Image 1: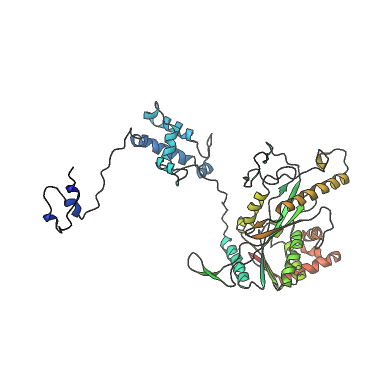
Image 2: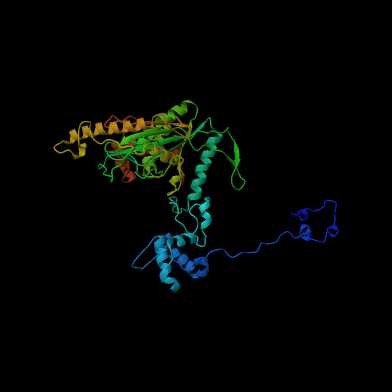
Length: 462
């Protein structure tokens, strides 16, 4: 076999000097952008090419049954939020006359849409003609609030200021976690298990939730945001403006209370924060910022909150105390919110007992018990349940910081502030009621608070 046609003599510098037996001009062609000839795909033509109207009908049907479309729908006999592949196939068969006999398969309908996982090799089979697929669930929708920008700016300013003056300032992010159930799964059964169990000894849930009425534990959380960066470290935001880096996590303190015996109020929050802020003040951090959720127990417009914050500021010997929050509907921006999901995962699969050891029924379902006997047994149940939660969280960390869990024993004498109900009764009516001589202490506290506080739209400052 003669291979001379495969080589070109390097001595020739011009194509005209080459042998004319073969055409070598393609080697010296400057235009290298030849488009390959398109070839007709093998096999029978696709349904989308022979019946393009079928794809249009499918896309229109999906659009008509979208999430927002369902919310706008009025005066109809049937509704649908989203559609199944079978629904689309049936609609296309009925809407396209040429497909009434043959129909369209579900696999064909799937291939018209976007690939479920675009990074996988199988995604090449999908044509992507319809911008639709089974989506992942989202839960980040928030109502618009005209004051949202101002609230965020105030919170960010406070955090940057405290980050710049780390040795003098401290920031706490405060909020309550979802209540833990006693007598059934402590947290929602929809949390996925992410811990290892023996194959023969794994969690086995009841087929239904049967919670014991009123048997709930209230976890109140206080996260001290500790800086991980050097004091005054400057960073740039998305549009190039200078900002001071501020912390987003830190040690987390959780205090548990049994709902039948106690409620979470601004008074209980102040009692939980008082030892923490006193300890910080002893180390020179005498200016405190509290970031809360703005809920009923943290409402800065409430006289109860104003008096409670004033007492905390005065009793801890602080130079300044600021209570601020994000706007209504945006409490998810509170840094402590990011800790609740990991803690829920630590408690996934945990069932807290609702019975006294040795008994078959919870106290609330036992007949012939006096009120005092029932309360005494429930005290045992809740103290045991809260102790178990603390044991599950013992030694655990969040983002490299310790989780410290404690609980308030049922019917234990309350330390610290304990006149919340008296305050509420006194302040629920007209201010003139405070002139009553029996309420002179409350009147003096309220007068002192009003004289020393600066209340703004997004903050309360002492």
